[in-house]
Amino acid sequence: MKWNLPNILTLLRLVAAPGVAVMFLYFTRPYADWFALVLFVGAAVTDWFDGYLARAWGQETKLGAMLDPIADKAMVVIALMVIVAFSSWSPWLVLPATLILFREVFVSGLREYLGDVAGTLKVTQLAKWKTTLQMIAIAVLFSQGVFEHYLGMSVFGMDQQMIEAILDGEVEDTLGLGWKLAGMEWAGLLGLVLLWVAAVLTAITGFDYLRKALPHLKEPI
Image (cartoon, rainbow, N blue to C red; front, side, top):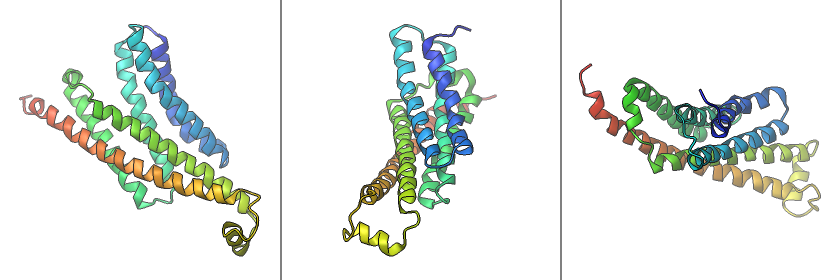
């Protein structure tokens, strides 16, 4: 087994996946949100670099081809679990997250059953966009947590009347409540929209994979 830089980057991304959840076990918020966001974005960037470098340097290996989709799925699944857990189980997050998780588990099981045949079912461009969109949506949702908790820290000890007065412009906003609230709301909305779009693409690519696999599933055992 030969290790090269692309494979090492992929392995680091795989290790970073559970690291996102660990951040919330060892750090308080918003520090956990920051660390998780930086770790997730950094790992997501390697998803582009490892494949690019492997092709550019002629270092594509079976190990890398095996680890890459596992690392992608681990990142998305674990990050979604963390986000849903801290969302008070909002149905608007639970539904797309469930669809994404179901597809990833289903396709992984299908690939395992197909064995060597799965290697002939190439990853489509739409599937790559799906993964990219999932990661962007998750990063944006993590950033919402950052805004939310900085806002919470800023209003700590204030009564509701004072908060409303600041947001209405009646009192000078020296703590930046306005932009923190706007950041939280826009990050939440954008992240949610992106996650739903990613969920739709996830369903489409999952159905497409099943359609391509059906002829092989009809073969006698």
